[in-house]
Image (cartoon, rainbow over all chains, first blue to last red; front, side, top):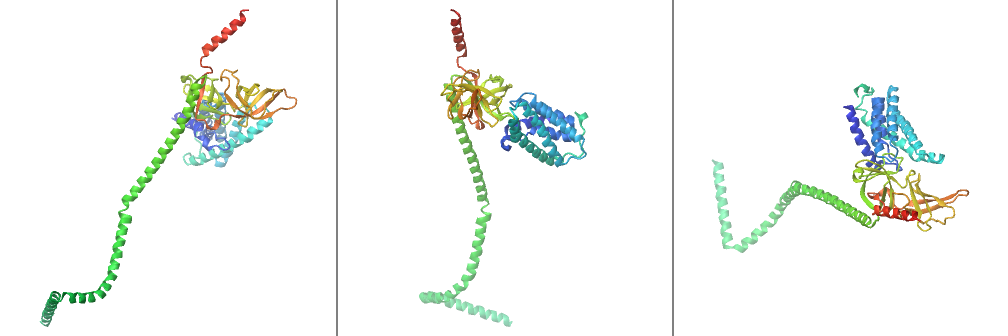
Length: 166
Length: 293
């Protein structure tokens, strides 16, 4: 049941990301809803949930992106897993922790993208960091924290240990 | 008994007075009229006060009825008219949008008919799923005959090339993406180079010969050397030529001809030249003739 829910979530999030989200862009950079969804589920549902949703989202995103076919699968799956690990070692997840965690994971994910682009020199790396990595990290953190606050009432503060349920 | 007699006397007196009045009215009509007018003046004034009061109440009630109770239907009618206006505004907007779309399709169709290439019209249905690639998603895929490496254009010029396809959609890497490379030629000087995207959302013509006299404002078109595009499609105009000492080539920044942020419909080049088979045979024939001697 949960797996189906994740499939549905992925089927909603990725088309939303490619179509309507450019209205929410800042300096031409959009929040990565796939990454946010994977991280939120990882934080709250555990690393396996985060990993599975991340892999699904990454797979769908790769189909609708001009980049290599592995890159979103790896970054989104990794982000979900990392968020799950981070969430497991925290006694209590607060919006501030969520914001910081999302920003860090977003930066790490963007670093993989930046590396895969084969930047010509430090200037291009710095340009990528300034124009995309930091902006996207801020957006991801803000949107993720907002969604967490929105849905916090529906989740109990105790993390759902659901590996067996899948 | 006394009361009864008094009442009787008063009644008789009243009857007598009424009879006198009737007689006076019948026998002396004009005089009685004047008398009545004389008496009626002050009576009218006295009456006018309650009359005005009642009249104002009456008007108040009428106003209230007309302004509130009876206006229920007007209010509803007003709301209906507002709804109609909104509906008509929406329809008007849709018609304007349709008219713009028809104009765009007309331009696209004219270009398609005049183009030497076989093309397939497609709609832009989305943007790249990440922030790292300048790409867009088209609504035509492998089932429509779209394959990777096919060129994508508009009547204005080159848009990019197809890099991914599935059965129903395809992903196009725009000409402004750093991972894209298209063979281009400067229209005025015929110097060839490679057009690559830049990190700033523009394009750059690289590998221009050092002795070339290219200058800002020169137009760059496709050279036709790569398979995706026929010769002569507009890519953009040079805005700045850079020549560093010690470099083997010049390079120049290009402002793309097509506004890539406002694309709705594009053409996918399925075959760069209309009669590809004939062109192939002609080439083979030429090569064959060369080999004979």
